[in-house]
Image 1: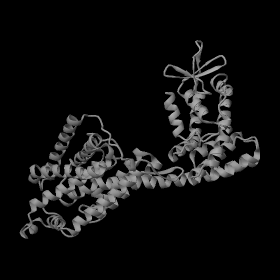
Image 2 (image 1 turned 60 degrees about the vertical axis):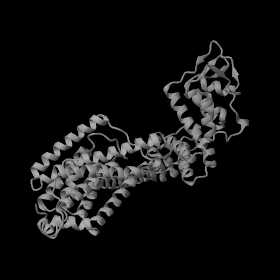
Image 3 (image 1 turned 120 degrees about the vertical axis):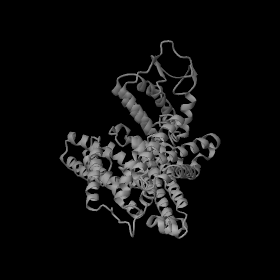
Image 4 (image 1 turned 30 degrees about the vertical axis):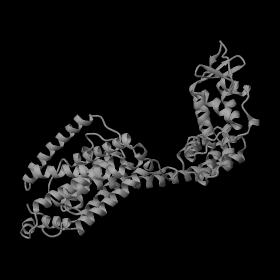
Amino acid sequence: MLLRLLQSLLLGGVLALCNANALTLLEAKAMAVGDTDDRIAALNRALAHADARTAEFIQALSDEAVKVAEDQVFIVSAAKAFDPVTRAEVALAQNAQDAMINNRMRGEIDNALAALKLFSSDDHARAAAIQTLLSQTDPGKLALVERAWAAETQPALRAQLEFVRAALMLGSDDAAVRLQAARQLAASGNRSTKTILLERLHAEPDGQVKAAMQASLRSVDAALAWGDRWGAMFSGLSLGSILLLVALGLAITYGLMGVINMAHGELMMIGAYATYMVQSLFQRWLPSHFDWYLLAAVPAAFLASALFGAALERTVIRFLYGRPLETLLATWGISLMLMQLVRTIFGAQNVTVENPSWMSGGVQVMANLSLPFNRLVIIGFALGVLLALAWLIGRTRLGLFVRGVTQNRAMASCMGVNTQRVDTSAFALGSGIAGLAGCALSQIGNVGPDLGQSYIVDAFLVVVLGGVGQLAGTVYAAMGLGLLNKLLEGVAGAVIAKIAVLVLIIVFIQKRPQGIFAMPGRSAQT
């Protein structure tokens, strides 16, 4: 364990400190035994000139690997005892006792370890340490933070460290220092800053400093409000892109072909499980290329769902055209069978599909607004699928046949169009797009047998609201429902928002049954 601690701290960059300020035995003992307040004060003093040995000792305290006996302090690892100052192996005293770590002390130790990561060579580690320290108000860490601030080379991290430094300065005994800190925190726009200002405001004795804190609170509240607004808009756009992906396939099978396919959600589920299987194959056979498994999963999800959709159309749907109720009941039964089949093969529990490394993390736009990479990729993916489908329907021979059969099946047949082949191709295309939706959904949540049931109703609402057979209407409806849902959630909560959206859709359909866009010309004939 000692070697693990040394390696992690050495790699973290904590060695960039001077041996003249090395850990002493008195400091180690002061951190290990005594009153909690005294130990915390000793911990903060040690942080002010921390070196690698100090960091190692604090980590050992966190791991409960420190023992004390009278004037001796030991780090115990693998049944061996080491001197915390010299790192030399020593004999463990028989009367050595564990250093007691209560909850308060553990919290301070965790904060100290986070503070030490401010000197890491890894930008992400330093950023995480800064986020941990944003809620700190203990001025004992000010010296360490100032040293990290002076050494920081990344402008964005340096700016965040300035806010941490200002928050710690609020605990100063000098009113002028507190006033400067309060004014500086006005630009932070961080929820932790708001909490700190509220805590300090009640105890602040100086009127001028209190007024500055109140002004900063107003500025922080305004920044947070804008972050929440933009966050709701992005969440709505993200939800809209997911609804668009789910509804695009249904816009073909239901909107263009008039088939009420209740198994559409299960076709999505097939695409999601195809993605899971491709991931498993890459993990087993191509682990070094795991980050590229999605490039293979996208066509695999499309083909798996498209082939199943084609088989479904040839064996069941083709005999039920013009009989919507029977089609609904038959596809509903098929959806139940598919869910049970997946439970039998993969189990009833959800399976996890991991994001590639390039889809992990996000873009920090504001202090309280982060845009996850996986959501951004899905938005771009939905746009790409939409453009490809619009090109396919509007510019290709298959699209011409689909539009011809949709508008007048009998006339298209008289012109030599093989309507049965067009039906199969169109249904396979809609099913394949459902598989792509399942592939995308696997990147933002777990994959399970009930995956499709969560989206099938919303998908039908999008298609009906947008106008049957209208891709443009599907886009407007998906984005509108996504944004409306998320904006109402922020006001009334998730449940009330769902009910309100449903009521609005019912009222809209009553006033405009054809949806946002009406079908041009004659509708599909059966």
